[in-house]
Image (cartoon, rainbow, N blue to C red; front, side, top):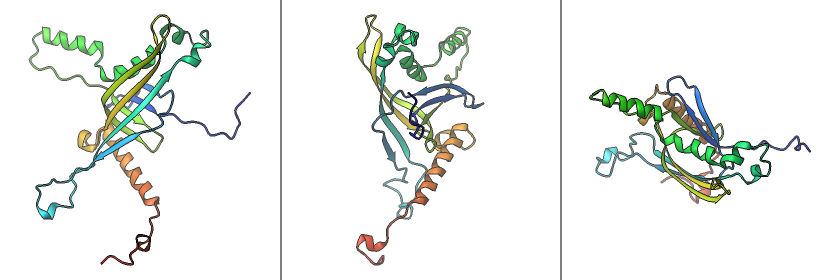
Length: 218
C-alpha cells in the first residue's frame, strides 16, 4: 500500500563530511531516528568583567555555540528481512557506528605517512587535516562543527556479539568565522547560518510596551 500522497516527507538530521578545499562530499551519515531533543548552548563573547565601563556593551564576536544530542540506532526491523539487508545480518550496526566513530580518527593512511616522515628524520610534521564536518538539521541549520564529545552505549547484540541496538551521544562545537575565517568553506557556511538566523529574527512580531505593563521607556 502506498503512503498517503499528501503526507509530509520526514526529513532527517545528519552529518556530512566534505573536502574543505573542493567542497566535494566525502560521506553522508543520516540519523536513523531524529532525536527527541536537541540541546544548544550559547556562550556570549563579551569583552569581559574587567573591561572599562565604555566597553560594557561590546561583543568580541559570535557566541560559542555547542550542541548535544542522543541518537538511536536499531537494526531490529532490518534483521526481520536478512536477505534484503545482508550487511546488517552479518555485521549488525557496526558499519553505522564505524562511520560515526571514524569522524574523529585520522585515517590509517595518514598515520602511516606521518610515521614514514618521522622515520625519515623530518623535523616538523604537521597535524593531520580532517574533512570539514557539517551538522545538518534542516535547510535553516547547516553548521560547520567539531565533535567534542562522543559516547556509545551498545544495548543489544546478536548471537555473534554484533551490536544491533545502540545509543550515541554527540557533543559538537559550532565553528564560526573566529575559528575558520571568512574565506574558508566552513566560514562561508557559518555566515550563511548567522544571516539566516537574522532573517528569521526579522520575521518575529514582538509585542508592544503595553504588553509589558508600561507605556514608555522612562
